Each structure stands twice: as C-alpha cells, then as structure tokens.
Image (cartoon, rainbow, N blue to C red):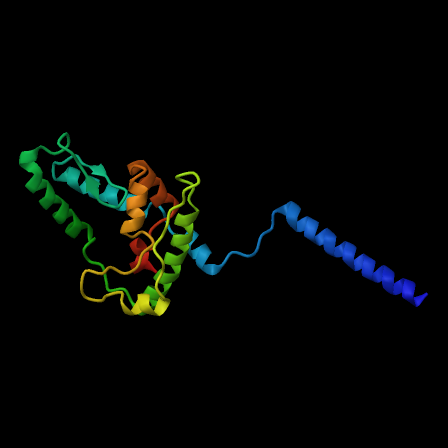
Length: 198
C-alpha cells in the first residue's frame, strides 16, 4: 500500500511539472530581462532628434531654414543655404551649439564609463539582431574588455572609445541608404549620446 502511495505522488509531481511548463509556454513567459537590457530599452531613441529640432529652431532665428539630422545636428543643401552664405550658416551652427549648451559637456566619470560599456554591449546585441538586410546581419566590431574600455576612454590620440556604432557599422548601414541609418538609430540608440546622463 505504501509503494502505491509513493508511485502516485511521483506521478502527481510529474503531471504538476508538465502543467506548469505548459502554462509558461501558453502565457509566453521568458527568462527575466537583465538590468542592463532594461536600462538600454529605457534610453530615449528620439534624444538626438530633439537636439536637432532645437538647432533647427535656433538656426531659423538666425535666418536659415535647415533640416534636422538624425545624428542630432542639422543638414542643408543649396536649396536651403545658397553657396555665398555657407560661411554664415556654419558660424550660425557653431553659435547655436554654444547658445544651446551642447558644447558644455562635463567629463564622463569612471562610474559612467562602466555603465556606458554595459549599454554598448546591449546596443551591439540590438544592432546584430536588426532585420535590415534580410539574411545578412550587421557585424559589430568585437568589444574590448570592460577595464580596457574604461581606462582608454579619454586616451589622447585619434583612437575613439569602442562603440557598436563605430565606423564599420556605419559603413554597413549607410550602404543600405540614409533611411536605414535613421531606422537603425531609432531602433538601437547609441549609448554614447547619453553618457553624461548615466
């Protein structure tokens, strides 16, 4: 009698396990999202466009009609700015940067650099998962170690800190057109744009 009881208990536990698994599958539950993934998703993808629109407004006050650029600046062609006014337009852009405080960026602390590194890893995952070219995926340059990234962040010279949005990534995206670059920027914001707010 006691053996029958043990066997039925095991069978009940097995059925309960299968039922829980089926419930998880039906409700679409997945492993908990990491804190870094949550932090990355919380970045405002429109941040650079908001900066661009502020500059467009500033340039309008200076008599220039320019267009917002997805990288946070402005762009224009001969239709917007005649060639004989280019120097004035470029000076206007520099003045707007000063007036809007875009040149007053404080130094990025070591703690912010560590956070930036983790967000860069998430950005790399995001870019590599983009379904822009169909079967062809964006190839992001390998990340250095976190310590190397932090220590070399402000190193003198032309070497920029590692970014998933580096030159190689930009070349790949640009080959598909400017619209694709803009879509990618919205889908996978560049954490470096938020470094001072981390």
